[in-house]
Image 1 (cartoon, rainbow, N blue to C red):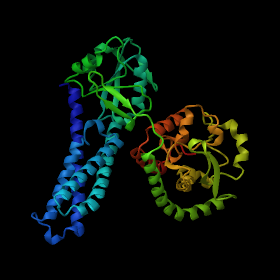
Image 2: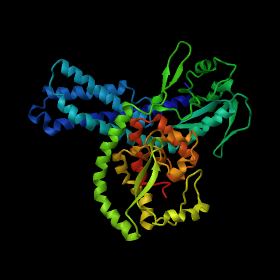
Image 3: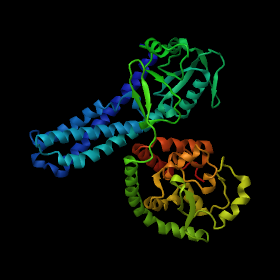
Image 4: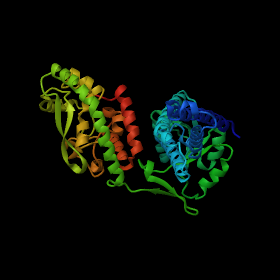
Length: 476
């Protein structure tokens, strides 16, 4: 076995052991908490007590399902939503199977485990997985726990893949070189860094061994060699842990992709996006519930913000602005006022200093923004009244950025797809740089969300939005 492959498997085993121990601690803590709360009774908590046996059965089944669902396999380590989804699936399946067994055999003792242990344990599991993910990302930033990668294919495809790998560095790939179909010696330049071309694609496995790579990413295959991938897999046995095939299905990911095996021809099935149906009804229900919860603390905070806004400058506390929603319908979006009352009249004179691209208008040091408004914008507090828009049905909590009518009139056929679902208070644009994004990046992120959204993605964006509000970036 190659030393590089052994090093990789060592840190993978170390990380899996960490997860296994903390998973066991989280499950044991949740199950034990149910007992400690007095649901079983201290006087009966013996090794022969039926409720104690139920607790042991619940804990054991839970841990077994976490293993069977492969929630700790290398492919999902540090991946975020995929890892949390597998943890949730394992937890739900464990309690679902136990519920069927207890119902069939009329066994007592599971009800309180369902009520207390399941939600508490799931919360503990997600939190400890998140903490380990943060630790893994930190280690990767220090140059540890990384997969050394060689990218193979045509020069254009290799450059495209390296660019994506560099931008998503938290996934743990470090590109150490490339092999190309032309075998040219000129390095490939991405973001000011030169990646050496070590040879031709037909010698990828040999160069992988020489350079100490433990993963090979195939950006594209030689047109004249149909068996290239299969032969490369044979050659990599014992020297690499991963052979990754890349496709150019730009911004198609998540629940829309699935592998459909066919004899001699593995097919990647891409689900056509749907903008109606049950999942959208569930999304609307989640919006209503979370908006009602959010409006309680907002109602307590609003009087203080109102006093600060009125004391800083003349004008109303709330600012209403026409925005374009789903299917091009306009609505009045609410915000706490952050600008002077003559902001719209002064916009024309400031157009010459516009720092945004496309139809967007942004100035970092906008003179129309008030002192209190600058603070509200920095921490996104000016967006809080939009939960009323969500409750009213004009917006969703997560969605594309709501455009101005003047922006929407400039949309081409591609950008118009942003209007296929309701705009959101937050979205991928909010957690990816906000005003620092270019127009093209903003459109690309919104389209990625529109076509690939899921409830798990929404929850992830909400969580990351909370972190962005605490440590703002690109807010002005």
